[in-house]
Length: 163
Image (cartoon, rainbow, N blue to C red; front, side, top):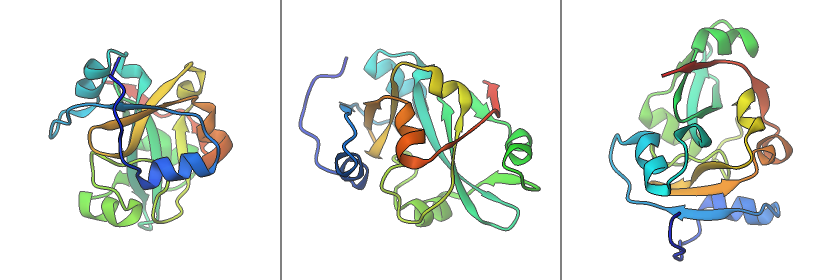
């Protein structure tokens, strides 16, 4: 496991503290385009338990957040059917950053700049603990997955595709 070191506050950790959410801090050496395989091996946890925060948009360019297992992709067709809308696509990095307030690679669903609906892959809620971005590149927080529903009102969906 990652050694305990002090990490400065982010909007995400401020949000979690404000809402009384217990979390553990897991800094690691960030690698550009390394993805969840880098963070999961640095933390010594399964990639399935590391959750990606993806900023997407529907056909009317309305932003939304999808939380997905690190070792899975999002089926945009299944997601569009589930939420329901005509189509869903990932936002371009600069658009995602404008909506969330976070750099791509450091996007957290907590403490985002603009209110957006949050969707969570249903099977994430069956895990004991998840590791999700804490609002900075190279920094994950460990939380109970039910925080996603309880605090963010995340709606469960089924849209995962194994990578």
